[in-house]
Length: 520
Image (tube, rainbow, N blue to C red):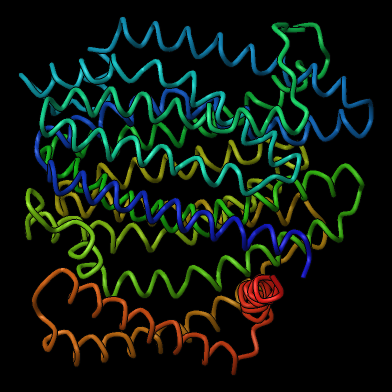
């Protein structure tokens, strides 16, 4: 097995552990605050601080890797380190300015993000937002540290950063129930800070040395600004879409805002497990291939990465459609989180998850463009997709309510994927999505057979095991287990190369680990 495959599997294992802890965190939050006022205000304030830096942070993280690789290969490690320190110091300054301005204008910010909030809900959201805004400094540093560790092929360490984050928030939730919800907000600020601080020792171990200097005359800094501007506009377009979604959701009530947040958490669990894990490993490799002028390997990696994502995500999409209510019920429905909340959250999840495949494949193609130092094409395509999304939001919200917002997001995701495919064909000679369509067809057939099997099994054992949370969890686990077996058998007979690759990656790595333990 290749080093990249092993790294991907290990990162997935770490991500599973981290995200399982994240689901426990969200479950505790749902149990404590449900979809009420405090939950809605908390997720809104948290998203404001995240979105404000997401534009710059994502742009820096995506442009840093290819430029650092280029400097280290064509010049020297010291030259690359000087460039990295310039980026670190610049990000800290920019984040500090954004935080101060955001604190001053927190009121108008809340009105933009949640125009439906009024009275004490609005005042509370402004207060929470001001407390959380300084966290963007640590978000910026965490993004840079993660990129540096990926450059050094240390993919697993960034996967752990969600663990201290979740633990601190869980402790904060319990303390807040005995004291004040403000404790949760302050705890979240500390938890976000921990994402950067956790990585710091490992970054230094890999050779990073901080210097308080910014070389604004560095030609590579100018290259970065040229590369980063379209990324900022492209990611900014995505964040505008997120702002519009949340703003429209706030007009439908605080319960809708909170339900959207819980559904998105489940969506992000799948995204982080498969998409982020794979791209964390593949993106630095794509950048290296471009630097070394290995276009055949570049295209092959793009195709195989997309196929692996298709094989992994299609059954999850079908599984979530079949078991969306059961998943939400097991994870969240208790205490303050009611059956009504489960129905709303499950409906949003069912629609949202359909679009995850398009977003994932778009992310692969986007990284391909960034590796070629082309950030203009993703920017244009993202803006077009967002225009469709916002238009569909405004059209569908009145007749379909919160479901209309979710449908708009899923439909616009596939419009964006279509645009990205056309652009890649024009950009790179020899690129074709034909193999991806074939793998998708086979995966969809296997997933539909799996879905029927899961539905049948749940229908038989579900009514017999009605009762406690543990029984519900057992029924869900058995149904999922049957689905995995059915999908695996069908895919084996369909002879999908990427499925066999995933199977060998997972069980080959586990087998080697077991043998090593046995020898010890």
